Length: 254
Image (tube, rainbow, N blue to C red; front, side, top):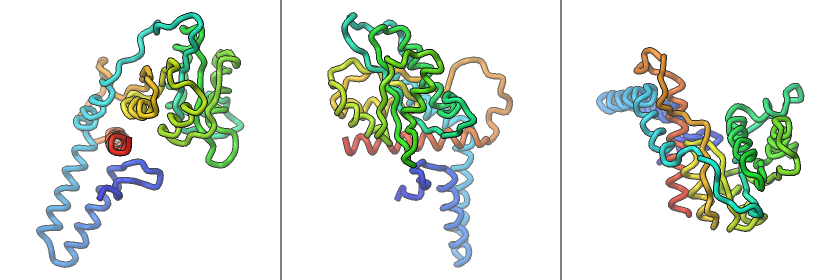
């Protein structure tokens, strides 16, 4: 029943749901089921307004993001204890015109910046960049590593996971290469962090969350007409739906 909520990349979309409902409304209208058609059209309008205005997307996103606070340092560790700082993958592009920090995109750059901040404050930490290549070319992990070096990280303190495609695969691959009792800090978007922690705990790790790229903040805003429908709000709702459904899947399969 929820399959219509997914596009080809597996990302839940409000537009897919609205398109489905409107098509059904037209079909019912065509076959003289006007009351059903009007009801479906009305539901479409309600879903659009709930998704396109800021109130519901912000509320649902805030519930996920507030689960974990930004990481406060220092993290307790002995001088001889190795700390793993894992930067979860988030997409990239291979464009020879761009430096590596531009190839990984804004989301990945935000994650990397937080990981570098922590790396600089923990002497025995190692930065682990993750992500595969769908085309068999340079992996996202390698591009992220190059970006980290450009931003001043010692190459000797960077390692890579080149195979994982998803967060679940990142947890599984990390478990094959490192001791699950290692001190592990996970850096990812605040919206994605609850699911990431759940998946890594399911693989036997006891991760420390370091959320970044917060969508919701409590700072002052100059935005006017905050109640006005916006594509930005729909995009946030897409991400929220995706995370809630993926969290449900992780709970059922974990």
